[in-house]
Image 1 (cartoon, rainbow, N blue to C red):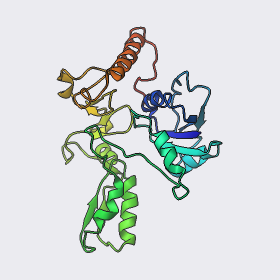
Image 2 (image 1 turned 30 degrees about the horizontal axis):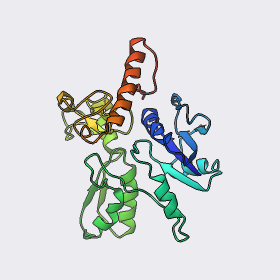
Image 3 (image 1 turned 180 degrees about the vertical axis):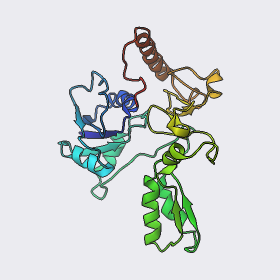
Image 4 (image 1 turned 60 degrees about the vertical axis):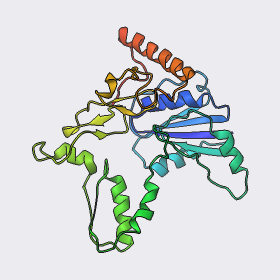
Length: 271
């Protein structure tokens, strides 16, 4: 009934978690995973092996091009685009499909909540915010890799703003090139892959990823009694059900066994 499209930018570990959620949803008819750049194939859950299609890109493509290519393989009535870094606790598909039966509805999406239970922040708020700015104001922007700033700066210039500035190449480029003694950057930069965070010269940071809620966890937070490697952290310990903790505990046990015998597993760091 639903074809799911997921694009990976070296995010195999995240997708492995997402697939463990999708295998519980009977509405999923096909899953198309696009590797936008070379990376090791992940292990597909047994329940999904017959319905997963893997696409390896010869050259990297953009967001729209990747999902348009995946759509060519869709034979179901509905097509669902998912980011690789999300987790789905409760099945949203029945309600979404019911909404789409309305002839005036063409696109439907669930409300995304953050780890604290609030509405996830969205870049879609930007146009409303910028309307409050005067067009002779100086506007400076920076983001992780510079892509969102490229889009935002073009949007602002087309809207009449003259003094628009951005950090060329984003935080990545800044951290990679700036002399640490001259750097104005404090802390670490979150990244959407298994490194979790990076520091100057793009060296791997000190943060880990909670496998229960996917929140970055600091060394200090890992000292909490609520932090259980591979299972929970202070952000999600009181929100996870016993069933979820049991599942995550079993997964972590398999990871530890693989490590003991020096065998590869789908959750290991690859970047």
